Length: 99
Image 1 (cartoon, rainbow, N blue to C red):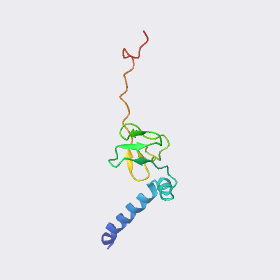
Image 2 (image 1 turned 90 degrees about the vertical axis):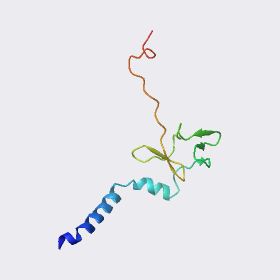
Image 3 (image 1 turned 90 degrees about the horizontal axis):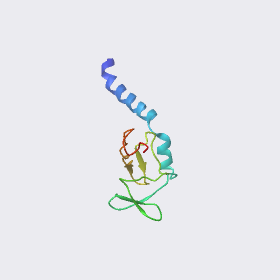
């Protein structure tokens, strides 16, 4: 008899875990309309800061809403991935060592 209800209990348990670990403060900020918004181009490759256009793949606004993991930023309509960090130069490379 227990095995009959176990799939339902597992499903409810997964939903509860998802609710508990979700980014509720981030969602509440977006739903309340308190998150900063940015104008993006129709092709979603550029965002406008009020004075100039910036490439989405190259730079993200400093005050954009980010989830706890910091991997994305919110424009007001869509989530975009954070730009890739520039490659690090190894320590002791000729370009960083004193002359």
